[in-house]
Length: 147
Image (cartoon, rainbow, N blue to C red; front, side, top):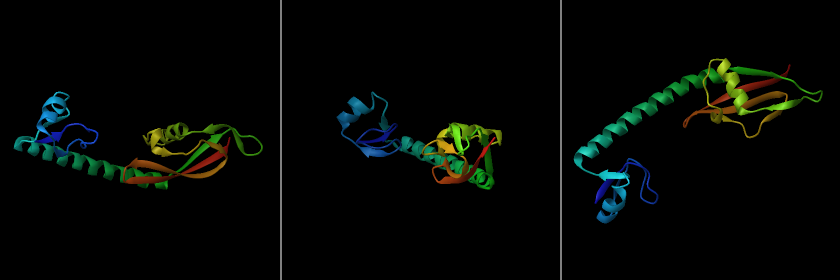
C-alpha cells in the first residue's frame, strides 16, 4: 500500500515522501497516529502543490537572506567594553551580546545564527560567520574596543 507521510517516521521516511508499507502497518499504526494518509490522486496533487509553495517560500527566504548578507558583509560592528591593562575583558562577549548590538544597527538576527565557538574574552578584531539561511552565510567584522 502506498501512503504519503505527514510527519517524519523513523526507518520509514521523511514528511512529504510517498512510501510503500504493509497494509496492516498503515491501518494499525500510521493512520491512527496521523503519521500518514493514503496516496490517492487527489492527495498526490495536494502534496505537489504544497511542495511548490514550500519551494517558492524557500527561494524567497534565500533571496532575502542574500540581501541581508550584502549589508552584513559591509558592516563593521564595534562593541566597547571594560577591559584590564592586559587587554583582557572583565566579562566576555557572547552571541547574545552580538545579537543585541546587531539589533541596534537594524538587523534582527537570532543569537543561534551567530557562529561563536566560545565567548570573546579579549580586545581585538574578529570575523564571525552568521548563518542567515542554510545556503547563505555572511561574514561579520567585529571590533572589540576598550571603553
